[in-house]
Image (cartoon, rainbow, N blue to C red; front, side, top):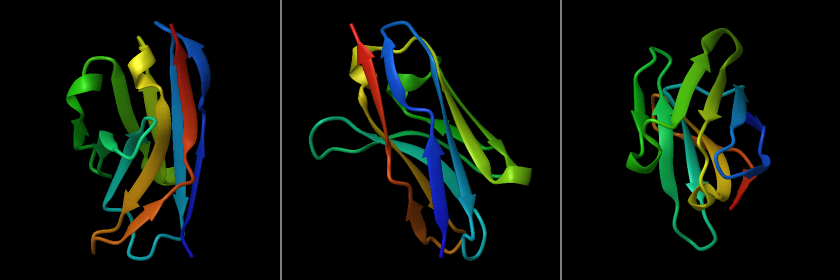
Length: 116
């Protein structure tokens, strides 16, 4: 059974920084892509950033230039460095791991709150 463990959320003032981490273990078939997906209040989810084990990255338009995604393949751990945070970044941030076969595994989510 895959295990996805996230950490690093919290409360920060606008302009501040936070770092999220996500560690995946026992993922059947290995890791194809790791990603952060966030959900502000409401049903909509938004891709924040994604990364492959070969360091191919992709960012959502709203976070380009402010957030940096990285991966430690030896530890199956992904990081998201979030700088210049804005109130509109407030959301629950989920780690999503996709195997090469397309199976998805999700973490429980971490709350990030940015106060104005």
